[in-house]
Each structure stands twice: as C-alpha cells, then as structure tokens.
Amino acid sequence: MENTATYPIGIQDFKTIREENYVYIDKTRYIVDLIGKKNRYCFLARPRRFGKSLFLSTLQCFFEGKRELFKGLAVDSMKWDWEPYPVLRLDLNRERYKEIGKLDVVYDKSAISKRY
Figure 1 (cartoon, rainbow, N blue to C red):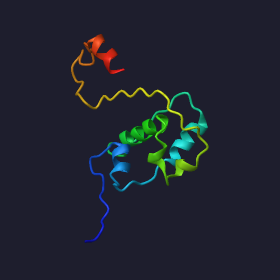
Figure 2 (cartoon, rainbow, N blue to C red):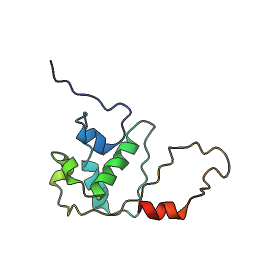
Figure 3 (tube, one colour):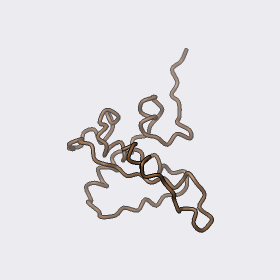
Figure 4 (spheres, rainbow, N blue to C red):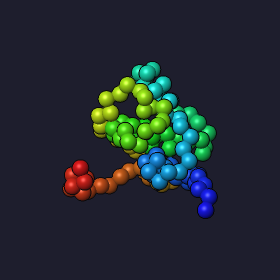
C-alpha cells in the first residue's frame, strides 16, 4: 500500500502534528524573527483560519523546551538553550462571550493548587 501524507485538518496542536507525522509546513523561522526583535508586545493579526492557534501552540512547545519536536525544522539550528520556561496560555475560544459577565470565573482555589 502507498504511504500517503495526512493533512492535519482541524488539528491546532503542534505536538500532535509532529508526533503523529501529519504534514507540517515549517513556519518556525518566524520564532527566530519574533525572538530576535525583542519586542515588548506582539500582536498576531491574521485572518480567520490562518494558523494563529497552531503558531501559539508551536511557541508554547518551543518555550517549554521540547526540542525533540523541532528536529529538522528551521528553529532546530537556532542558538537556543532549550531550557523550559513557564508558559501561561489563555484560550478564549472555548466559550462565546456575548453576554456581560460571561468572563467572570468562579473557581475553587484548592483544585488549582492540586494541579500545580
């Protein structure tokens, strides 16, 4: 049987794409550009469905020091210590925020301390 590449339709997780051998178009050179500029803030303005979530997932894996996921990609040759850094990722795609107060969160502090 012929070995065919699978496209990651609907998959926005860099780790999954790399570990499960989906087709990945290397955009990691933009990480080098982003870090090299040393901007205080970065605004990723792209149209819908243009890979913003995947790029953020890629950045997360990069800053968490998961070098094995970057083997053979542009950023693999970058001079970087590959030490893990703490990453805070806030995903606002999980809910629709059309009502006032929808972002108000009630949480259990003991549950948070157990996870971390």
